[in-house]
Length: 161
Image: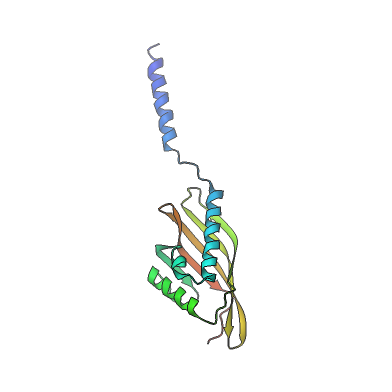
């Protein structure tokens, strides 16, 4: 009998330690829905030309990468790019964002979206629909999803104005 008690105690301690080392279950579907919601809010903020709300989706150290412009590696340069774009009277308010993928890591702290954005712009040749493919990488910071990398590539460049 004396051998059973130490064995039982050792088994209990081992099982307890195994339970402590497991990561908590992440509901990746719920997290993906949260990221989808952010994308919809972001599109609404663009339509409303709400620069402060748009900037709220970015992490402090976010990076934005678009074709034919230098990489933007801080909030100030991202803000300036959005400010210039939103102030451009040639861009219409018909902005839409269509997601075709949202993936969340099993750990629940990294996610990405992929899709297309569409908007209309007035050019010397008339109204042109601009189609841009995008990938946005999100990181959970302080319990909130923030864009850390935003990459866009237009299907074709607009004519110079």
